[in-house]
Length: 278
Image 1 (cartoon, helix red, strand yellow):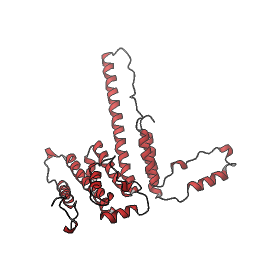
Image 2: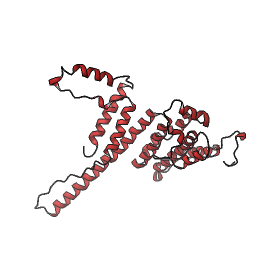
Image 3: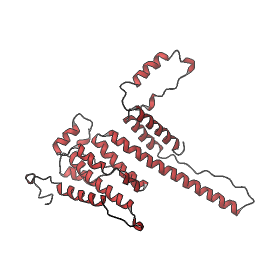
Image 4: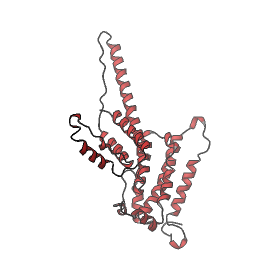
């Protein structure tokens, strides 16, 4: 049955056939069968599997965001990715009961979409390269954010930052190896002359974007990075009352788990120290 000939009286959603085919693809890639030792392409299988899961998730998400299957849902489905087409229904996603209203109209529940997304987030992602892993995690984070699951989004963004920092460290090590090999070669060519140690140029391009992600993750978990205040001991007594009142304002309605917040702050400090040019 094609989508054009589908009808509500058939008792099946018009996008049901597409969803079933995608589910078959997910099941197929999830059980690839035994692989020989000489042909262990787990990276390719992991990429195909996560790609099929994301296609299924975007199908459900586009139908949900467009209030059902139609031209708007098809347009959203054709423009996925980190910079996707956002339906007008999500222009004000934080309005009260807006997301629940979309679920009741479209017949697709947010929990159903989240369950589909969770299939793409697992240990098999470790078989992907860093760049492919970042692309998959970016898509997962966007879907969680649009659904209103900001803690899940922040959890995935922490993994994105981890992948980015791995690339930074790898690039730094490769640069150091190149300069060390060049200095060794120059020393062999001119053994009488002294060699000068050279340090690779560390570009700070992109640091602001990484720090923006770090600040957003902290905000989601109830961490106010601006709450740290420097005190002048010479006028400590005169400003004690004002500082007490300002600290009360900063700690108004706290939320989040302290143990998790401490770990996230440590991660933020490690990222800030490891960024190039810092």
